[in-house]
Length: 294
Length: 272
Image 1 (cartoon, rainbow over the protein chains, first blue to last red):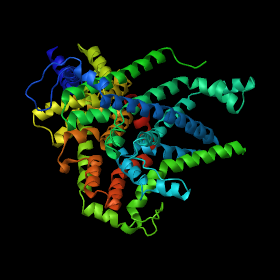
Image 2: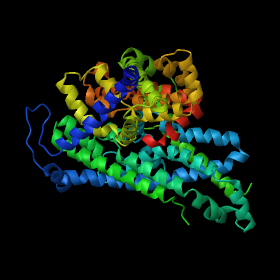
Image 3: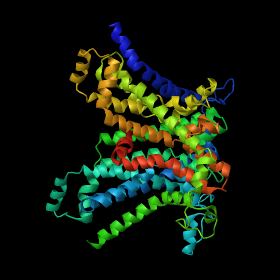
Image 4: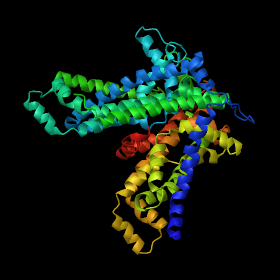
């Protein structure tokens, strides 16, 4: 009996301890810190109630970071889900006729998912360089004005969103391809009997409704990763110029680990975490209802 | 073929070219001599390709050091994760003990917590214990992997109880059964998890930016940024050579084992 209990402890103990120490305890601490004015290195901290949250939602800088993140997500979600679906449809249709080419293109589209985003961001930065970059050279060849892709306050967030779409489309494509492969061919046969045998009618009557759950899942996964945008911001703009590309995770990094305002950074963390949890709850709620758009 | 199909294929190919553009540009600039980069007539491909930038990146910069750090840190994280997770996942799947349901519930709940949420308290704790700026700081916080525990427990649960019992009849210890019976049988899942873990930590920038300030400890993405900030735009050639060297291992691994990679990174969509 005791022997068995010791064996269990030996097997389970270390991992359980790590999960408590590095996941549950920190989550608890973050929720506590969010209501204090703790500074990294300070001997003590004062309880400040909801002041940190008031600062996040009330100050221009805080609202700016939240709004930028939402804008970024509002571009990346439809962009990368839509493109992921289009590419998956194309490659799925191509797979029977040209299997080799289809597999090759699939690998190409997935490449940004496996690549080191920071290194690719450095390459993007060079591509978009105002004078040495290819982007402006090509624009000028077409007699169009060059752009300050990363230092124009009105443009920078859209540039980053474009790179976000570039990075995540291949991931969504793979999820959609799995969804497409799961549609039984008997449904297409049945639709063909009813006259929906090609093109759009076939898509709207069979493919799209059957992809409902996949589409929902892909949208939520994309939203969750868009909320986390950090690497491209940290590499290419550091939130600038003038906070035009500041996002929630970058603000969390800056406030907590550059300015050492632990209490305020904890409040940002809590808001970020609750937003992600809300997304997960939404997903569970909708999956429960087995979303098929009919 | 119908014209619509040809148009569709054309658009797919055009999209693929756009996806490849930053890759081609990175490799292209890394092969260009200095004068070809600083010219008003920028071209996509190098006119006189040279390996000089690679020679300089490998001998005059800390890029090799960053790559070595990347191997040490990702390898250390993966080994630690497996050493802790395999026995625990085995017990969750094949043993009955008080608190098993609670522990599994905790693992599923922990799946919902991204690392960004726990980073600040872990940073504060490590600062207090003076553990920052070390390989330990880069590796230890990832010892707890809810995702690994969950994935392995699901794989181990597929193993028939008869096989486990056979091990017990042979007098194997439980730890030995976990490592010598369950682990090899779940190898495809282990590989999928290993790909996920190595990719995530090789590419991670967030925690290395927080945990270390010593450039000698920089992981590849962090190192690339140190390098870029130091050269401040004068040496894009070696910088791009460095970026290529950092990206190459995972991209090559992906091209060689596409199916496993796609499985490891995508069918595990849960954790992203």
